[in-house]
Image (cartoon, rainbow, N blue to C red; front, side, top):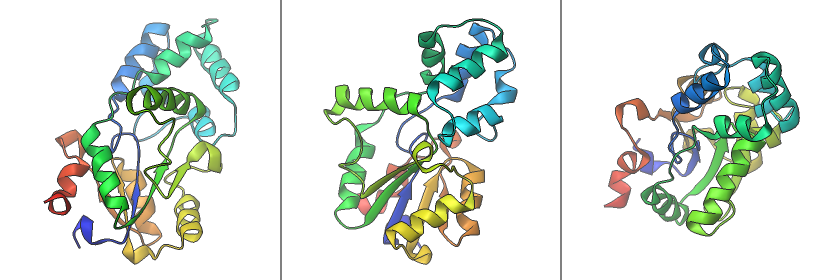
Length: 212
């Protein structure tokens, strides 16, 4: 089926709606002294410190302390936060407009692996740029990993969304830019589209037929 044929759509946030650049954060942390950052965190895999932070198992203060211990330098909170948030880029208006149109005809939710530092910065940006403090006005429900105690690609996070929303997995499309998350969704019977951001693919192209 075409993307626009599904009744329910689960969107990822970073890379799908919000543009991100992992290399900017890698470069920022390397400048702070974390020279092996690439081995600790990437789009495809990450160490326990980052996993626990994204599940909400540790607060921002403990995450920052973990960074300090790895670097071996008493970095200020602001320096750590700025490096961590460096990956967060722009939020194209056409994507927000697409979601607004989709929401009039379909059931749509957001499912994102994220954490309190990223969300704080992201919501502040939303307030400045679009006058809304979050994305709840666009989605039927917003699911953030750090609030759920679980993260993609764990199968339980997909099952929880299906159960809470009452979605039929065969009528549900999950859109994400990370292949391991796509695999997780497929494992529970959800249709999934790997958005090839690395090739310039966007959700506006994916739903081009819906927009015509």
